[in-house]
Image 1: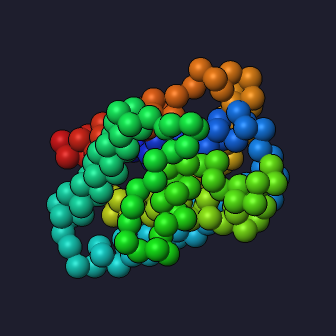
Image 2: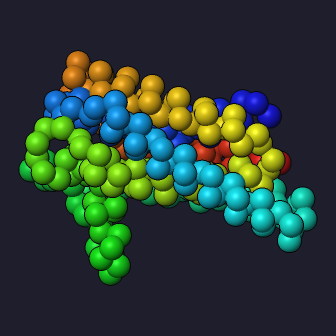
Length: 209
């Protein structure tokens, strides 16, 4: 049971690793306080997700909880798989990422950051400021929220999982940033998505057995 939440934490932290690689390649600086803010948004998302998941447990059976938990993990895995395929099938032109068109304008900047992490530096200062860190944090928190609900349903210790997410996110970002500066030219973002998707789908299937 211990390895399951660790693998989940790693799978949703791969996005953070990818963003770190991108910023490292572009030499965009991310101060530690901005990195903390990004992670605090994800932690807040997890707390809310855990609360909703625990509330849901009062209305469903153990079997239903297991089914919902597995389905959420599988859906997120397939979503990452589709994202990876689209990034591979329709590569960026002239360094620009293709942005999804969604009618809800308020979500536009979040989708934009997910598809093109470099756009988080909205003022082109070369440094991610706290306000920009908030935007990135919200984008990453969407995945964390889904996993948070799934984890709460299967009764994994909340504080341990949140601590794991917090630490792994920071480590993955800094490692990705370092590698981006050194060997970023050989890193492909869609490959990271494929890895993350594979882990999530595998974990979702395990829960169904």
